Amino acid sequence: MRVLLVGAGGVGTAITRIAARRPFFEAMVVADHDATRAETAVATLGDEGSRFLAERVDAGDEAAVAALLARHRCDVLLNATDPRFVMPLFRAARTAEATYVDMAMSLSRPHAERPYEECGVKLGDEQFTRAPEWEIAGALALVGMGVEPGLSDVFARYAADELFDEIEEIGVRDGANLTVDGYDFAPSFSIWTTIEECLNPPVVYEADRGWFTTEPFSEPEVFDFPEGIGPVECVNVEHEEVLLVPRWVDARRVTFKYGLGEEFIRTLRTLHLLGLDRTAPVTVPGVAGPVAVSPRDVVAACLPDPATLGERMHGKTCAGTWVRGVKDGAPREVYLYHVVDNQWSMAEYGCQAVVWQTAVNPVVALELLATGTWTGTGVLGPEAFPARPFLDLLTAYGSPWGIREQ
Image (cartoon, rainbow, N blue to C red; front, side, top):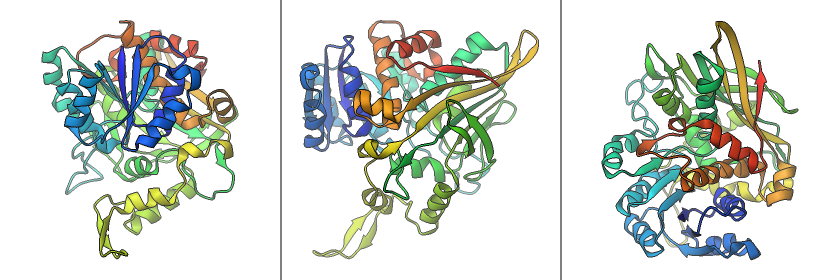
């Protein structure tokens, strides 16, 4: 397997450090719009970096990405950029006849008249619209293969296959007790992506109603997270699992709730109130004249890069899937989860916990594709594949998962 990794930020860099320890691929080209960032990601691998090569590429330039895939004979494109670049990279992979893997799906657009009741363009709709093209070509696009979405979806498939006869509800629940020294507000993941998913109308799925939306931060609940994290208030957030799980797993209801905390929610609401969550450029005065800038990009530029916060960060992050249903005629409720301690991920990989937890899952998926354990054609989510091989290999990577009876 020859891989083109597009994006050498926090998650991309973590991918290189995890993949460098595994023998399943022949080469990995690390490409970024900032050549220095790609070169640094490769250089820090040291002796483990002999299979890696740095390149510069604009993720929005489909022709350039396709040409890079062809030049290096890469048969897989792994997208580690933010969701704005999903579609150009998705199309570039198809043009170059490469397998495509991402960790977040094509962007949504709220319903014009009823944004908090009806879906407009849903996450992933643009990709699923092109599924027949991939199927006819016998090609695979594995979408939403990070931690959430990704591992959370694998948990849903595992629950359906091995733990339940009938499923009433699948609810992804994400929480942490992470703190960052020296910052009152320092998100542990991309603020651009966090704003996108937290301020868009959350989507809920119900079998007798289909997909519908609610208001941001709706249906608050306190969820008790394992391994010492404890109770965290979680709220509805737009996320890919709600759009993916029902396509392959039978459940009467699917939700995603994120443990944000009151202060984080208040900050996001303030950004929205001031219009600082917008992506459309506004014109501001500049030294050389008026300059068009995206308010959300300005917010991101004013905050610390999450990838650089590891040494200041303390605590654990938990991603997991809560499932309620029936097994052998009796009610059952479980929480399948994956916890990463920031102290461990920093000591072992030099990566903070949230980006490491995101990065390990696409590497596991690549290995399953390389060995032929996972195969398929079309545009498929993680639920379309058997879960047990993934969970076994994740454990073999030194990062075991857990299950708690509720």
